[in-house]
Image (cartoon, rainbow, N blue to C red; front, side):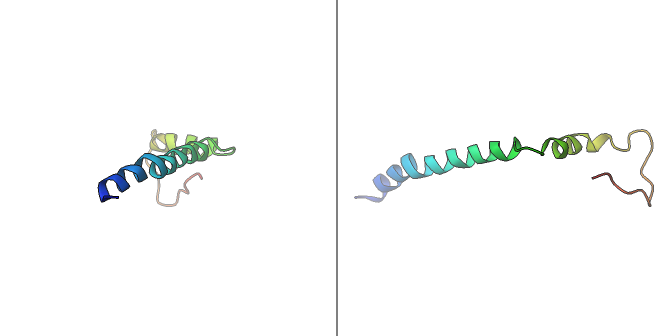
Length: 62
């Protein structure tokens, strides 16, 4: 079997399967229970000090 045919067969089967599993894992990671607060905090972090700048002693909200 020549190298091109081997790599083509590998890409069509196992690499495709691993990429699909990785994609589904990433979706499951984002939609896992309890992650809503973390995602909301990350999305709103740019507005955290919108009305006044943060002071040196101010603790960030986690």
